[in-house]
Length: 433
Image 1 (cartoon, rainbow, N blue to C red):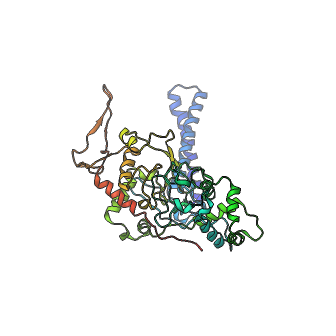
Image 2: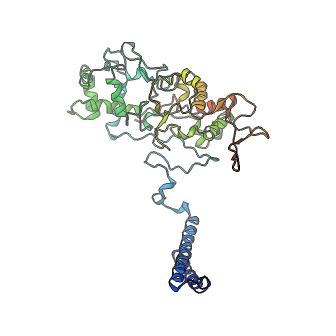
Image 3: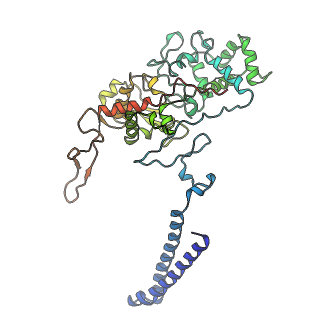
């Protein structure tokens, strides 16, 4: 509708309002025996209501006939795009019946771009693999984040200097560049902040101070030229430069070639039937509410309802004891990424789930409240008579609700695992040089 047509419609509404005013004043008001002031008030109320209705009708028609495809990208209403920070493509609203999925985009750009970027990456790789940056010279960043097997150490909890056991399972460093909060408690907001933590942690690398880290670096003459190339000749060596170099290297650790990404990009053969069923289940039962694609983490740059989640939500006491979830008072954690999850067993913040299938079963029960078992009527098997209506209340009001069964079959679990395996892009690493 053009602006001129809209004005005509508003004018028509005004005329309709005037007609209503006259009608009410002369007919209804008179028959009701109202005084002249009363007739005027009644007529004004109804007349303005008619006018408002006309204006609303114009606005509704304008919006409903708007051609979204002709809008410039910068002019689209914000409600259409949940997040667009320069890293992520625009994402249409997700329907509960028809899901739109995103592939992993190009990695976030290095903060310090230019001719020194390659030098910083090379320096960061050397620092990442240097055990001399730990108190007893035995532990490097790579000790807990092995790049030959998924980006973690495969242990329930990581081991630091002197074989001391930490309290957390090591998250993978692969694809960490896509996350806005790092560590299980989310205390680091960047790769630079994260890189500083293990160096000074008394259990991990256990260096007593930033100055001690710099002293170890100065012991090796080769580092002098490397830092000059990365940060400029004559630049004083600082702890910040150390963490910036490590972070520059970690930003290159981006997995590629995952079957999921190929499927989303249009390769229908990339996912087998089991993985496709698992993909639909992942969306349908609510896994995707926390593990948001394309990072499959609520800590990704595009997220829905916040970074942290309570764990467990549903207290199955047997499972709580089995996975040692009652040993800590704090039960709110950053939602981890499921990228390359097939390669990063054991699972959970304490490494208490040994296999991916076990983790899926536990999450279905503890986070989604699902019963997991191989029953004839699984979550989506709605044969006649398979679902009993829920009945509550007595007396003259009695709600009756038809609900879907809460059971996930063993086949459903296998399909979910098949889908999660499609998120594996390792060992292909896209290192930007």
